[in-house]
Length: 261
Image 1 (cartoon, rainbow, N blue to C red):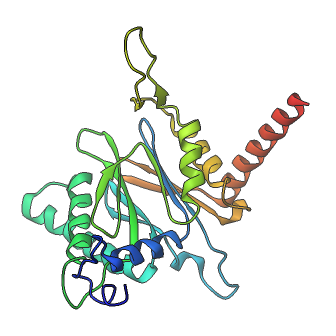
Image 2 (image 1 turned 180 degrees about the vertical axis):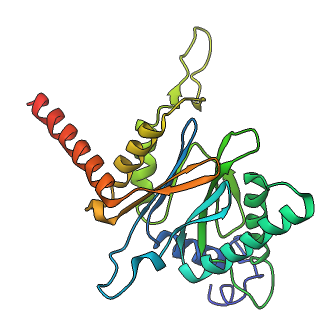
Image 3 (image 1 turned 180 degrees about the horizontal axis):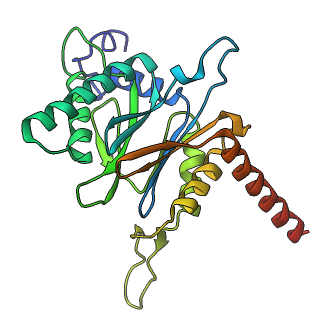
């Protein structure tokens, strides 16, 4: 295996690009990031590391704005993310200057994914060690949520999680996301697979779902950062707001346990 993982452009006999898989491992060791698409808003949340006492926490951001209506959260190597984010911001401005209109969320997602894919088949470089959640609103006001990974794949989601501990959070979304249901089996038909259907989530309900999802893997509300993305705006929740939501969630859980007894 050693001779195949030294060059990014060389496939192993069983079809693997080991450097791309190593980049995915870097993502899986990064802090958790989630995205949830609501009716008129999108919520991004991350597991925030505790800052050192002499460090200004405002300088460590894993939720950033690319354009007026497009934001990004990431998991993986912070330095790689900074470079890719700056290039994506330049692309947004170039698009505006060239076409005199704002770029769509899918356009920027595709551009980022193409750049990530390019670094999987070029000599003398290595893949970006990050996965991204790109959210925003198209010109018709429709909220969008996309994910990209180091291999250059991108896909659209209703709710998703990247980084470490992503598996339990995805399982939480599968059980608690309002848009997921099983089609009823009709007589004479085979059992159908689970199908995602459209739904409506208010801003408040979307925020609560995000906090509940992160509490599956985070011990303290102080380690949670939540951002609400609306058309043309990005708002970060204050720590007090998050703590209030967590307290309400814990009280609700305790009440359920008491009722079971």
